[in-house]
Image (cartoon, rainbow, N blue to C red; front, top):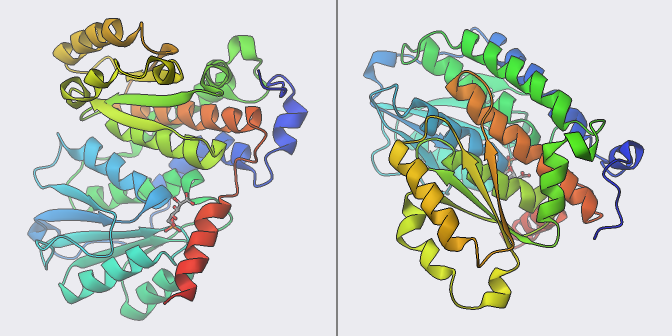
Length: 357
Ligand code: PA5
């Protein structure tokens, strides 16, 4: 049992030095503002010549790329690839729309990828709050979406992701996305009432789940093509906010390997708390797979919790799961007695790398 009381609203806010909870409360508005305020000059020349889309970014700046990949998969006829690396895939060229996304604008992998994209003749659109990437965009005259400073990259998902949708809308790949973002905003506003710190444990599913995950190893399972990106997001948020381990996988892939691993080491397995992310539109066979899988692993693990999407529209449903995971990870950080905001290990690793250049 943690000594932290999740009903102590004052203690929750005072343990959040960087205002992660404030950013979460602002996410519905962040999504709407990012949708409405795309700068005029952010456009893709020769939109009809674009044959592939690449999002170059890493960590909190890359997850929007995965959201874009999953969301557009059934809607646009060209591939969307997320590149979390120093180099870009060899297919990149003048027919590529390259989103260069780095919240800080100083992430070396992303800067290297953009430089490579320039040499390969890609059509580059920059999304950043500043740094060297902003300088690069200004000097090369790349279309630039400037996002507000003062956020953690992972708390700026709306700012980093929504503009990619708007650019695809402007280029003729997507239909008007504004009504969809309005649904996202409404859905998140409703959820906020349930998930916010002022909502007590008995009524707050994120607080309840954080209590289940405390001192357990969270294993988050999503579904290919829908909640897979959210499972990855939950894992990252638990790592970065709660400073705790977490792992993720997707159906149906995990039915072909991971479920075999629930036999040996029973004492170890008793520490695993599985979270299954569910959506009404998951493939019917996948829904059956989930039921059977639960029966297989149930005797081995500490517990299984299902979290279902809310909202009437695909994007809103994805965001609803993201929101639940974000809040759960912040409450988990409180239970562990850590501040959700600072990610000192990432910062010190970046500094060490800079020294050995
Ligand atoms: O959440 C974080 O702080 C990290 O995952 C960063 O997003 C990652 O290190 C990349 O930095 P940036 O988002 O500034 O490009």
